[in-house]
Image (cartoon, rainbow, N blue to C red; front, side):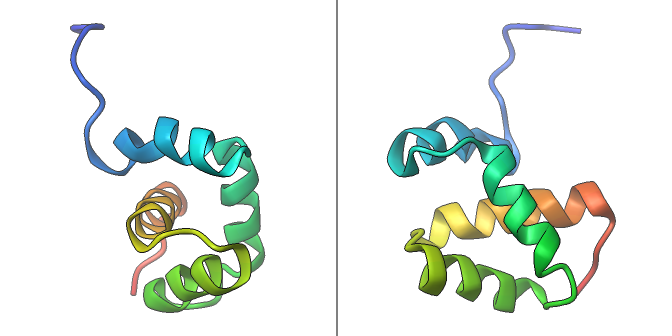
Length: 73
């Protein structure tokens, strides 16, 4: 496995998310655990409206969370 390969997909946003919002990714994933019953777009809207995340950052977190938990929709 090549350890120098760049991070791809939603996780590529994580350093910027942590720097911009001052919280670790685990914080945002825990918040998404609390709204796991919502649909993808609703979770994105939750992060944007309630916590002030930009759309790209919110979408990346939701996509990663849903892939990790096996959620669909």
